[in-house]
Image (cartoon, rainbow, N blue to C red):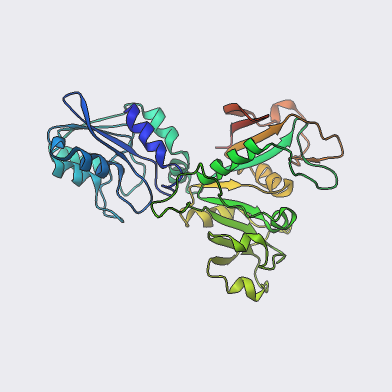
Length: 364
């Protein structure tokens, strides 16, 4: 099962919005086949493992990190493939919460006389697919807020300069973090200020089978229609979802872009987009993990509305002073006990900077 988990992680850049899954076929104590789900729409992990095992799969045990699927989607059910191959026993790390599966895969196997065991290394299997599991449970994407700040919590100087607070190693790591997500959310102000492309461009990211990198959907909030369509954002590959308020007239160059989808979203009485409505919309577009990479205003709005599930903070060894822009604008608290507590998931050094990943406690 540990080998299956390791294999599953190989698909983290290419499988979204599908879960990462690994499978290993063992016969008489020897591994005879293994595989992992490589990209959405392609064969599942069990199919690769059974193909490699060939006739040796008959009477063997298959270890798989997620319950084999039982429904016809873009590929046939893996449970039927295991049955057809003559597997004697299947060990499953965790059940699939997808209502299309949810125990039905295991039932198919058991009805065919296959011995099924569940729960082996379940916690590790859960950790493989936080976004997939989160959306199944809460019906909205898992929101990761990315911030790059100084030790004193500033994201830019008073004059707006922010390039570069963190070093090149941290910025490369951001590319890998982006690549694991389904969508990247930012604002027109950030796009214009940084000429931001907000795409994935790293040789360390595993390409799709066609040799191209999978690009997350770029979701840009442009309430006032500031973008012209000539920005670098529109000159790079990948789809864009442009969010604006009703009645806004957009430049013709944008309306003719084939990779740009436009939607209207309600605006609150504070002249901001309704973020709850946005998350509900993104959930319908198969967005499991939403990477928020924007300025302090949008980050603060997410924070104050308790919509952040994980914080990814890159902290540089520098001080920018009291006049610098703070990373978040938070309401004043009357008591220390009212401050949200974080649960550290990971703390590591990347180049000269620190990367701190935290889950916000008490939001759910």
